[in-house]
Length: 412
Image (cartoon, rainbow, N blue to C red):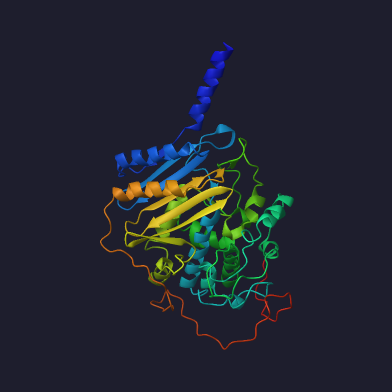
């Protein structure tokens, strides 16, 4: 009898682990839906839980899940995951939206908005932040084990932008003299948004993005959003059979705007659908968003040149793993979220995209890969290009000397 109960328990355990959900628009190709779920199921054996969305113009959206969250509960489409560095696409989108509103310009120097901060050159432009050409020290990657030690020594602390920026070291190069990925860029960009628009980054996300675009499952806990009273996916560690201990809001507060947004695969697909659509940004902002530098990076996202076209994307790793991408040839959007620490989901996303692309006709016109050299205003919705002011003496940002910069805004 005991043996039979044990076998039954194991069978139920396997069933729960592989439980999956599909949500498909009626117009979505059922054969493609089966293919996408099969790819997710096959990859899912190497993860704990997955949430996936594929949006195809003219067909609609397919949403699939696989695996488990806390206590063996099956992953559901409405469960939130930390989207890690995919958060950077929201920071860039907000900056572009505020430019459309005339509240800032990407070629403004950040010293126009922010007071002096050690190791941060006030001459850095917003565009250089969003394209990783500022040279700023990365508060996470450059600090290596010191960063993890800092976080682990204070796992229940709610970090502020000011506290995180206090950990950075000297920059790697002068602004505009190279490319180096830095999470610090997007923390500073969020502060610029706050100063330019006169509101918190959290409130600006809700006002300009979350609420207008219907992203009801997307939230920013570092800014005060409550997310743990709604369905969310528990984080697991690849080196341990037990779940990893997130520290609720503290977990997201340390990474701030560079990776602290939570969302669902469905909401992420909706975000990219609008970001690259015709109803969120002006044509001028769209041109800048889609323009790729020689470093294969645009504004808040990477770019791959494939078959004469471009795929814009960003992936993320802050415990949780994530990726969201847009294929410019077809308009297809793919988003994948995982609650297993240490294993990338990029491979699965590419498989899903290839399956969708192979069954979808290409657009007649492909978007070229270009680099924006100088912004030009094109309509009344576009912010006017600011005339450069005479150069002024700047404080030495490699030291901790007192700055004479205008104290327009103080980081929280």
